[in-house]
Structure formats: C-alpha cells, structure tokens
Image (cartoon, rainbow over all chains, first blue to last red; front, side, top):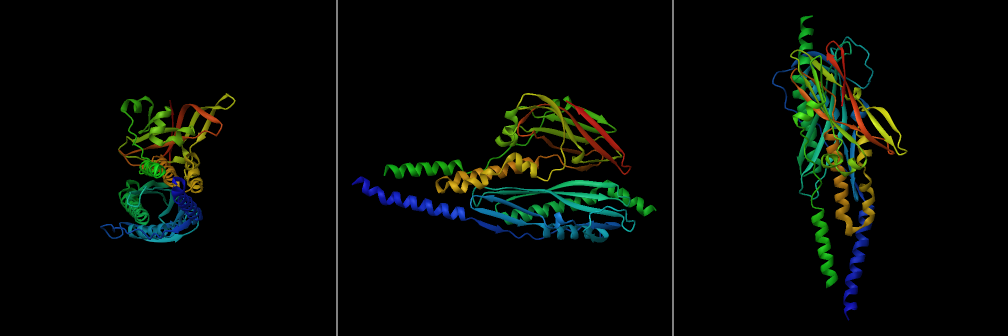
Length: 201
Length: 213
C-alpha cells in the first residue's frame, strides 16, 4: 500500500527534474543595453583652452562584456556607451576636440594633446537572489600625450557601483567611471602645467 | 512521507548554503611589513609586501587563486616630492623569482607583469563552474549558481585589487597587487625582486628601481 502511495509523487519529482534540466540546458542570452554616461558639466566653460585629438580605437568602441550562469548568458554591449561618454567628456573639458580612429602616434602639431581612452577591465559580482546587491567595476585608462607625443598624464580610473539590478548597476558604474575621469582630468597638475606653458608661448 | 521530509530538509539546506556569494576582506598591511622592503629614489618611494602564506592568499583572493599557486605582491608607491609628477606603468613592472618545476629543478625566472586585459585573471580563477553545472540538474541548481557566482566574485576581487598604471602627483600614493602567476607545472619558491620603472613628467626621464625582498 505504502509503495503505491509514493509512486506518483516520485514520478512527479523525476519529471519535474527532467523538465527543469531541459529548460536550464536550453539557456537564454540576454543583451542588456547601456547608454552613455550622464556627466555633470564642469563649472567653467571649456576649462582647458587647447585643441585635443581623441583617438577612439576599435577595441574601445566595440567593447562587449558578458558572463554566464547556469542557463543564462548576459551580454552588455558597452562600446557605444564608452565612445559617446568619451566624446562628451572631452568636449566639455577641452576647447576643441577632433576624433580619430587611427592609433598611430605621429606628431601632429595641429593638436596640443592626444587622448587615448582604453578599457582595461570590466568585472561583475552577482548577488544570489533577485533582490541581492550586485557590483560592477569599470577599469578605464586615460593616456594623454603632449605635442611631441611624450606621456603627459596616464591614469587608471575605477568606476564602481553596487545595487540590485544588472542594467542599473552597469550603467551606474559607467557614469561613475566617466564622472571620476572628468574630475581627475580637471585636477591633473601635469595637464594644468602644460596648458599654462602653452599659453605663455 | 519520510522521503518528502528528507527532500524538504535537503532542499532547505542547499538553499541556505547557497544564499550568499563569497566575499573577501580588504588588505591593509602593517607598517612593519611595508618598511621591510622599501626603496626611495629621486623622490619616488616604493614599498613591497609579497604574500607567501597560502592561507592568507586564500583569505584575500579565494581558493582557486591559492590552488593555482599565485603569489600576490602588494605594492605601495608614493610621490615624496613637492614638484614632480611620476607616471607608473604596469607594463614596465616585472617580478623576479625562483620557480620550482615538477621535476624539482629550481630556476630563476623574470616575469614581466604586463598590462592586464583580464584574460590571465580568467585563467587563474577559472570559469569551469559556469558551464558545467547546468547539466547537473534542478536538485543542484542552487549550488551550481553559487559556484558560478563565486567564480565571478573571485575574478571581480582579483581585478579590483590589481596594481594599475597611473600618474602620481606630489604627495599622492598608489597601491595594488602584482600577481606572480607560475606555469601549470611550476610553483613559486621565492620572490626575489620587483622592478618598477617610472617616467618623470614632462622630461620623460626614467627612474628605474629594483626592490629586493
């Protein structure tokens, strides 16, 4: 009698496990859209009165971050957000900005400085539950060279955010990375000094 | 009925076990450790603390980093000048150490720490758990998700603590870890020295330092 009573339940568990395994193995890929960073503009208009060349290379413009957990792959196409954020940041800091995709550092006296932003790393820490906090870090590196292509300022900036939502946390980390970059570029003594020297000439 | 109870207890246990992702503490070396291997040249001060103890590595970077035999080396750089800027580039730093291969031969190797793109970190930490666990099925789903979340968290912590390139204005400091990653069949016996090259702005003059341990 006892055995008969257990059988339907046992079959149900097996069927449920089989179905769940199938669903998990089938998997899904989620593409999460991120937009450019919202930057708080610096107080003064065009803080550095110099002409800049912004080099946006392919790796930077097409950057994609992804991670997988059982059954799901999350893809963040971040390149466009990086590109647009870098453009708006440089345009708010320098008097004029010309964009380029070439990575060659040939001396071009037309430009006072050359700026190359690079993404060194993006990392993500998932929470266990939907409501758990998640963390995202963006490691952005700025390489700024003078007219003679001598390194003027190289800085790694880490944008970080912690909140319980994939898209929001990544967006907040990008906002943070570019906002910190803006503050760091404005505060960099070597860039300030270089601008003063250019003004004297 | 007995089976049902067992299933509920097992399921609840798995859920509790899986309810949080692994976390790592922040590393704060004491001043005596920092002054043990220290060098000052042209106003640039470099302090180095290698993490040889395996249980400490496990505590700060996780089991997978410890098992792989990685030796994290903490670096603290300070610009002690009042008028100079230094550019520290990670791709110009290097680690020299004694490695032992599976055959037992000790050899000295000089490993440039290079510019990280994250790839080596993924190799060290491993992402196997992210792909294997789906096949295990529903009863182990929670531990599967926990395993992949823990792998992500370990990688996240590894990247967050890496020493990175930067410009040091007067009075500024910069810190982080360089990772001495041996080949699969080798173990790090000892870290001998760390080479750091800094560029002075705007003269582009180089300051080369070798901190012996």
